[in-house]
Structure formats: structure tokens, C-alpha cells
Image 1: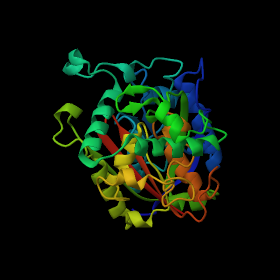
Image 2: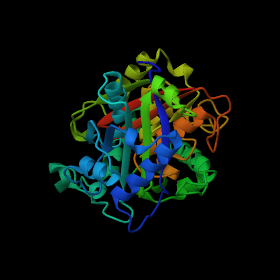
Image 3: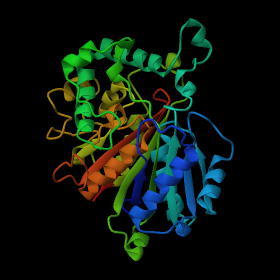
Image 4: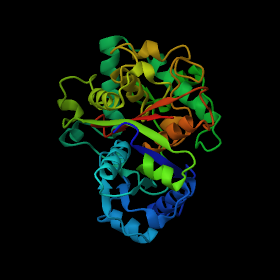
Length: 374
């Protein structure tokens, strides 16, 4: 399926605190902008793939959104793989198009945890909550501590990821947090759950985003101005909670990436720029290892010395990622990947022709990978 489908349009709302905005209204705004970017009318959309709002689950949410948009899709629904849902839905849309189940698909999400409810992020996790197992950061902190103990990874190396993402976000006028970060400032930020500091943790954000997917042939027929080919995609999942895993430093990202690279006929060495899911710095570091950009246990050294900044060996999160652009989970990384392939990114990587995008859900429970080209 390499190159048979494309991302034809992208759109998003503002990011940050959007008081009074419903998730339906944010989805509609993002979809309207994505369709305008593709240069097509909503009447052509016959596939609607939606990530459910984490903050407030609603039954039949996909149908509510279709009604609000004024469309009647042939195929679609609402997905829940956490932050991995977005790329997974793009893969499902591509397969549906290839199978003739739909012609033009929209993939979208919207959420409002900043001004609505963030309970989903704060909840106790399972029976272990009686022992203090509260909140998402606790799981990632356990994983980070294990990585440090097993491979000698340091806090400063995690900080290098935060510094890079904040540097890129500071140059992005659409970013929620436009404040560069030094390593000294990182060291002084308060601990949330040791060893993770405030600047290791992503933003909490309201916002919506959408992409339009169609076949490369359809895009040509419709005269889409800047279609970006989908070269490969893949998924990987684990069914075990953190405390039950035999190995905390191995993730489903390995399978997800291998599947995508095989489809694309590529290797990690072929990737020019990457948008890596950075809900926490340790997640980004371990994903870089799992994707094969460096050996397992070498992620700490790989991210040092500006290697992941613009001009480095592998620039990542060129619009700021979840740590600086928006904590809205995942689709903004796809949008930035599309812009890099079009050559109009805010922090454009000169000569970039391939981009890897990662999404992740839960506490490294689900993972999805997307490879884009020019």
C-alpha cells in the first residue's frame, strides 16, 4: 500500500484554554479547515474516524459529530487506543479506501481537559491505588526509574528532550507554551513523581485537529494542491498494566515501527525528521530506541548535544510536540509531519523528504506509527 493513499488536507483549532468550547464545535472547526486545505466540500466525505474525547466519554459520539457536520458517512466510528488512536485511524481509513469501503475519509479528535474535566488523567489506577498508584505520571516514573537503573540514563538526558521540544515550540506562533528552556532551568523544575520533573510532563490542552485521507489517484483527479503520500503504518499493543509487565524497558513501539518500515520498504536510516510522541520525556527516549534510531539503552546518549534539535542528526518534534505545542494527544504530530513534507513547517528541516510519526496511548499500552514522504 506504499503511496497508494495520501493526506490531502490538515486543520486544527487554537491550542490552550478554550473556555466554553464543546468538543463537537472544536472538531467541526478543525474539519472545516482540513477540508478547505484539501480544497474539497464536506459532501465528498463518506468516512468519519473519530478519537473519543478523553475528558468525557459519550455514547454514539461519532454519529453526533456526523449530524453536527451535516454528513452521512458510509463507514467510521469512534476509537479508543488513547493517544495511539489517531495514527491507527489513519491506517484504518487507508485500508477502507483501498478496499473500496469509502472514498474520502476524515480523521479527527477534540478534547477540553484544560477548561473541562481532567479526571481521566488524575484517576487512581486499578487495585493498586490503595498503595498510592495515582495518576498517569506514576506509571511513567516507574518506567523512567527502571530505564535509569538498567542503562544509566540520567535526568539531564531526559532534560535534553524537554529543552529541544521547548526550543522548537518557542519558534512556533501556534504553540501553547512559547518559552525556551535551558538545562539549568529544567534541573530546577519541581518533581512531580520522581524522577520526572514538571518539564518532563506534557501540557494539558484544549483543542481539535483533523486530517483528510484519500487515494493518491483521487487526489490527482480532484487537483489537491499538496497531497502527502502515506508510505507505511503499523500498530503494536500490550495488554498488561505497568506493574504486571516482565520488562518495563521494552514497548510495543518496536512492533509498530517494524510493521510500518516493512510496508514502506524503509529503514530508520532513511528518515530525515521525526515527530515522536512526548507525553513524557521518557516515552520519547524509549520510542527513539524502539524505532531503531539508536540501540536499546543508548537513547540517553542519542538525545544529547543537540542531536534531536533542528540542525542535528535527527530533528524531532519540530513544532514543539506535546511538551510545548499542545498536550492534545497525537494528531498535531501528524499535521506537523505533513507540513514538513510539504516544505512549509515553521521550523522546516531543509531537504526533508521522509518523516516518521509516533503515537502512543495509556502508559505505553498502545502504539502506532506513520511514515510520510514527499
